[in-house]
Every structure is written in C-alpha cells, then in structure tokens.
Image 1 (cartoon, rainbow, N blue to C red):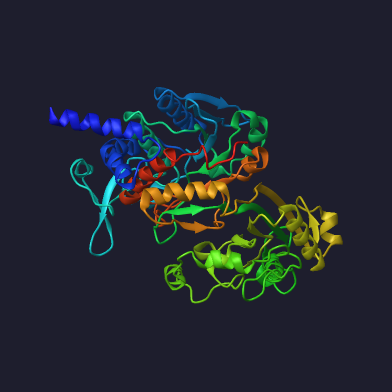
Image 2: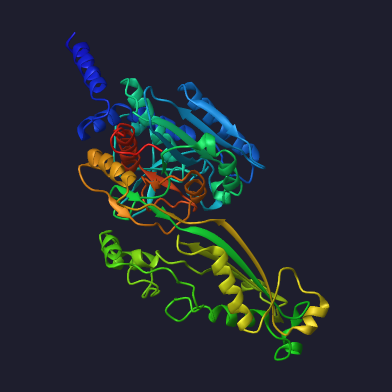
Length: 511
C-alpha cells in the first residue's frame, strides 16, 4: 500500500510540475527508463542503413513510421526525386510554438574486415582493459550492471541512430508520467545525409509550409572533446572541387619520354602549392574577405575548453596551420583541403612511366561569410593566372596541341554554412534547459568544423538553428568500430527530457 501511495504521489508531482523537472527528477526518470532505452538502441542499430542501397533504407523508413505511429504521432513521407524524407509530428494542447528536430537515419558504408566484431550491424558491449584494448563482454551484464565507460559498438550508434533512440526513450519516459511539452514537435528524418543530402534543399523549399516552425534543433555530432554538455550554434557548409591535369594521351615509358613529356603529377603539385603558403594559409587574394573576428567574438572562442597540446598529441602533429591563432579560431574561416590525390600507380603496382593524368579532390568548408560561388570564382581566376587553360571535360586533341597547360575543373556545392547568435532567445532557452539538466553552463561552440545540411532549413524557413551534440567525441564515426559510450547515451536521454520540459511560453517569440 505504501509503495502504491508513493507511486501515486510521484506521478501527481510530475504531472503538476511537468515543465519544471529538476535535475534529480530528470535523472530519476532517465534511470526508470534505462533498460527500455538500451533495448531501443540495440534494435535501431541492427538495421543496415547504407543509403547506397535503397532497399536497406526502406527498412529504416518503415521502422520509423511504425515507431512514431505507435506513439500517436502523425507520419508523412515527403517525396523527392530519390529517397523520401520522413516528417513526423505531435501537437500539444494549447501550444503556440513549434520546434522542428532534425535527425538522420542513414549511416556510412562498412568494411566488415576492419571491424573487431563479426557484424557491424550486430551491436556488442565492450569494456576497455588495462592495455587500452576493447574487449567484448556479455550484453546480459546491462540488465544488472552499469559502467558509464562501457560502450556499445555498431554502425550508427553515434552517427546518428543513437540520438534517435535517446529521443524515443525520453519521450516514452515523459509520456508514462503524462508529461507533454508546452510546444508542438515536428521531426524531419533524413535518410541520405551521409550521401550529402542531395535532394534536401529542394525538398525544404517544396514543403516549407509543412516544415514551418519557430526553431530548429539538430541532434547530431559529438560533444566537445572535454565530454562536457555542449551546444553548437552553427556548422560550416561544404563544397568540393576536382582538378585534373594532363600529360601524354597515354602513360609513356619514363626512360623514353621522361624529361620530354610533361608530367601531370608535377604540374598538379605546382598548381596546388601555389594556393597555400607554408603555414597553411590560402594565398588566393580575397579568399578570407569578410571575416574579421571582434575582441568579443575572440573572448567567446577562448571560453571553449580546448587542450591544444592534447589535440596535437592525439593527431600526432608537431605544428599547426596558422589560419587562426587557436583551434576554435581556425574553423571560423573557409578551408581549402586536399582530400585525395591520384596519379598512376604506387607500391607493388608502381611502374616506370610518365602518367597520363593527375587528379586532386578538394573540399572547401564554408562559413557564413564565404559565398561558395565567389570562392570558386577566385580559385578559377587564380588557376588561370598560373597559365592554365580550364576545361570542364577531357580536352580534345586540338586543345592538347593548342594549350600547354590544361586543367579540368569540376565544382559542386552540397550545402552552405549557418550560424545562430549565442545571445539569441533560442540560445538562452536552450542554456536554461541544459543548466536544469546538469547544474552548469554548457560548452558553447560558435560554429563547428564539420558540416550538416541545415542551412536549407534556416534559409527557407527563416528560423534559428542550434545543434545539441550528445555522443562521445571519440566514437569513431564514419570509421570502423563506431561506438557510443553508455554515460553519453544516458546523459543524452536526460538532455532531451530537459529540452522537452523547458517552457517556451515566455521565452521564445511567436513567428
């Protein structure tokens, strides 16, 4: 009888203070739903989700429809020219605000031979031994034991299915206590994020009325390397550039034609070297125009608790590029990164030839001040100033004879950068929820170095967007042996519960 009375009192208390749950109460609800959350996580990552295979993605779409539908949410597939997006929604009685959440359900491809487990889509529990190696331990331990440093290994545990499972767990925990947000909730599920979300920008414009909201929250990406609760107020965009230089029409014997037939690899190397100085700064005039960090902005960046020496030790580097004075400053600027080079053969396949072509793949991380079309124009002008004739397809025989230096240039834009002011009302609202969950200020990142396809929403919907990263920074996302730390998974559930119970009535303006 006493136990039943206690449960009734607890239930009534949570009902009465649905929007004011304290840190201890959030932790209590998280603990009560912990086993449910673990089951959801293991279930969600067991579905292969490589967007290169539409049949895999269809399974994930159907699973999402079923999960949200069973919880009383509306679900709608938003058709694109390719894989659809999935929009799900839940209205709250009397709500005047709407918050749009973003997750993606697809994952990077896997090379099974590089994973230290039988199947990357069969989650395993691991603990770290005294030698620093991760060893599989029985998953059954989770029924009665908990170590925040244990990890579940499987593709997409962190990027980005773990956060989806966190959200569902948090929602279910609050629903059991009859607690609902004071705002309407919409969620857009992206199933091609790892493919660059090629259909997303057009879809956002097409369905802008269905997506309309007052704010967008992105549950993706890792926390700061300190693993402290983190908010990120922006992300760099991304575009890419492919350069191909030409030598002889076919690879030629280097004894017969070396010193005579120009080598395209050397030509490409000289072109690339002309673009940056020895300190890593882009030499192309105007590349950094429009970016002037104020003393106030530098103060904001200095508050991020980066350990520069630790970062350099982890990366195994004895120096850094001098684009900015610190790591945080460096990612406030557009990058020009050579992500791959190819010409002829190396290693056991090496041959004594003058290659026919050389290729450089370049990615450009964008910031709000850098228009990608303008940057491409600057790069193109620079290439021409180095004496190159630019083509967009392989040169004809006539072009080869006419122009001594030819480069094929192909350029594309995936999506642009976005940034929300730290002192915005949306930022203040989120800081309040994080303070309530953890009793301290979160680490606040002005803009993150990685790219996520959010700018189409910001531009089309005219709303602020903020990222709430939850997973551990050393999660091996995009790589073999991706994992999520149990402590991060648990705190992620608490984080989402805090957000769902933060009042919006007086803190966010109505659109």
